[in-house]
Length: 298
Image (cartoon, rainbow, N blue to C red; front, side, top):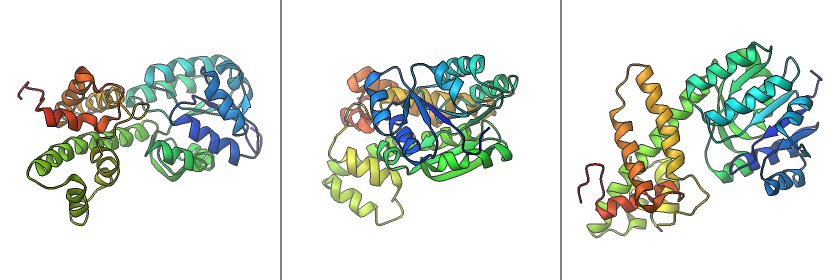
């Protein structure tokens, strides 16, 4: 590998577009980008990336390839294509959220081709991706982490080495599940407080000054749940269900009964069933307002 590696970036969606733009603008060597959506690829090229017409082209030209894809099935398929084309010693950094088992299986398959793999799922918002201020949780051997950390720092203000392959996904799934559960209890308490006569904005302002303060309250609460503003093309209930499904699978594999996680899963299933699909997931507060619960009580 050259002293300054050539990079690749595959997947230019809601998070990937901002991450790729940061990599392309900060890295002192070519960054080959690919996405099946033409407008997303054009935007990446405008930010400084070099256009690639396929996964295979990225794999043939890049020393380190970053992925930002919808889930484990897509990551597995793309990595299989990379493995059939890329050079020995190519490194794949998966910034997507997958199951822990999928991450470790993919790493094993790439290792058979003498390729390296790190799972590095990201947290925080789309705006954080644009600003290069993501939290990135990394699963990789120590030597690999040392090599890829500079690339990850293009995208994240907090890059945490969580352990060997798969450990990044462990931490990300725990982070997201805490997020999803917290939004539910915040929704329940907000509706309670509002019906008891406290304005939602004032309620959260007061709670934020005490021990009930949290990232969820300050971001999802103030910005989305108080104004009841749940736009599309943000993080919808369908994404929640993907991630919490991975989390439940992990808990069961570890011998833990994920009862609270499974209850939370049922609420977000109801959100999709009741017309909230595609909208920003804190919209689950609308279920609470309507008295819709997993037991069908109203």
